[in-house]
Length: 183
Image (cartoon, rainbow, N blue to C red; front, side):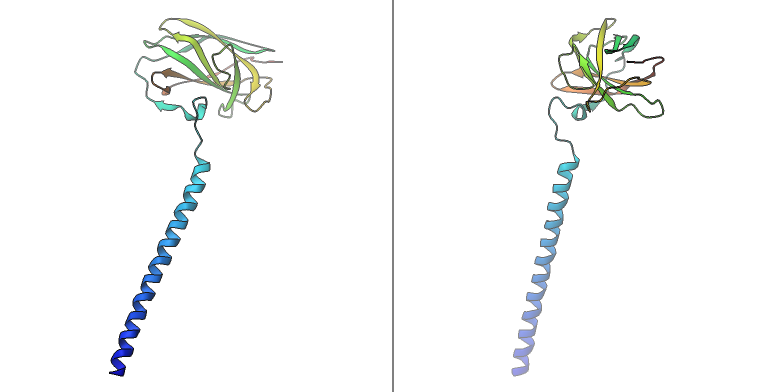
């Protein structure tokens, strides 16, 4: 009888040991999950309406297009004449530039005369209709409060507005500029 009681007590202790190991395993899993969540929270941008990185990228309809008719660079920045050569209205453009054509354009210039002051973003006062032209101006001041002295390449994306602003991921213009000095 005494031996049976010892075996029963030993089995009960083994059951408690397994429960404790499961509790520890679940606690470690939850701790790791909380740590990953906290880390990811700082990796993903905190979006607001005026942040270029938070636009909803979409495939715009075929026939959505814009072109640069001419550009002028000077001490005040860059002026461009844009033409909507597509079939749909365009709400604005996002412009990135680089002073080294071997690099991807990633500097955003401050717009002049736009409905916004968000660097890189030029919102037209009225949507740009098909076959219409407009002039856009950007200063030589960048998002990082530096001043560019020349631009060698630009990248421009258009965006459209509806219930929210949507950046056209299938309409990207990259162009190398010649003699674009802003001294």
